[in-house]
Image 1 (cartoon, rainbow, N blue to C red):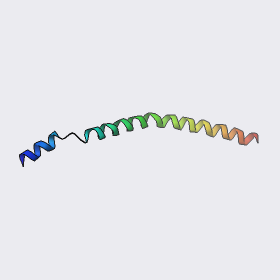
Image 2 (cartoon, one colour):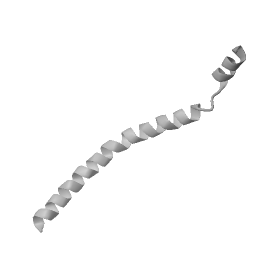
Image 3 (cartoon, rainbow, N blue to C red):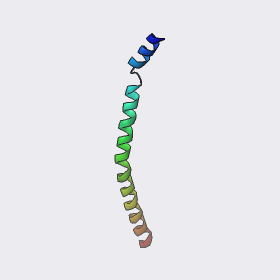
Length: 53
């Protein structure tokens, strides 16, 4: 039982997946405001186009 617990505590196979998840969430937090800003600008452009037609 002690040996199994030691092996479990030394096992780092899931660490890379957790790190990739943290990196992905950090990138998405940085991208979301930019996409929102672009979306707002597109609405303004399309509204101007609609009014011009």
